[in-house]
Length: 393
Image 1 (cartoon, one colour):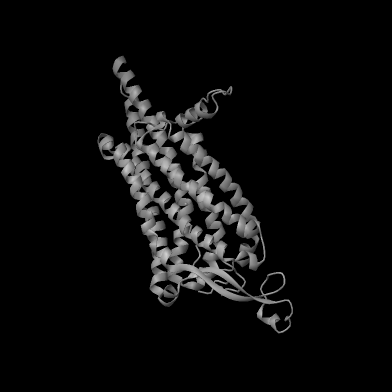
Image 2: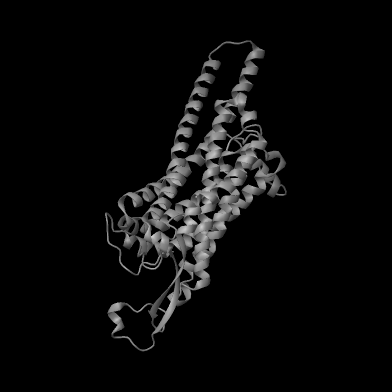
């Protein structure tokens, strides 16, 4: 968390009032989302690892749920410390808590980057399944899927190395009053009694990063372009390709229904058409997952890119002020997949009911339903603490 006691020069927007208002709500909202998301992702893992649900697609979804769960668990103590359990600066910026903030900054970014990488794999796997069904079993086999997931969990921590080497815990001596709050410059000449010089700790840029702008810019370029904008571009292209395949399949089925066939061939054609519709519905569910990702990640990438192009004034006046909102979008993205699976996948609902509700008298759902197919191959923090206590960089 960044402390905004010092004023920032406005660049193109004044969001300080919005920041002050929303920061009082963010703690409770984020806590609710994190608790719900943690439970939901645990349920996702339990359901997707059942034998009847095992497939390359669901293995990717399970890996995605693990990464999202880690993001949720990590954010809960952070929300408590900085938003819900408000204390004096003496008790807030201790060495122990600042070490945790540094860990949170790095760990949450790594886990969310893994989530982004797995979402890319999910999109590519699904495109191969619907566009190249003949090569699907070979190109997106179970073994290759496990290997791709392991690569994501190994590569993403390496990709985030610039974040590790440009931030550190640094101490600063401040004059605090008896309540542990900062004595501002204009009051120092008037307030002498009951004040103490106290050492506080903050997550800030390293001296090397402060003296070399190229390191700061490299960090932002990796974050905004490599981690955010490039995946969004790839997902947009793949999503459009998937939509194109869906439309082509719909036209193909429409032609089949207009052709007079013999009864046996007609039944065979109907079975094939039903299987294709089921595949299309699964693709629509995964497109919903990809669309949600784009809606939450693209604004972060654009703001990060503007921070590089427009300089630190934009970063302080706009990016940091919207940091809590960006975090909330990422948390929602990490928590909502369970709802998508339940509403759009009959197989997921069926397995969930058998696992948790088999002793309840629950009627089976009817109407249009979607299967996550076992024979198919289908398939997000940054605002992190470049400076703290005044945003002085």
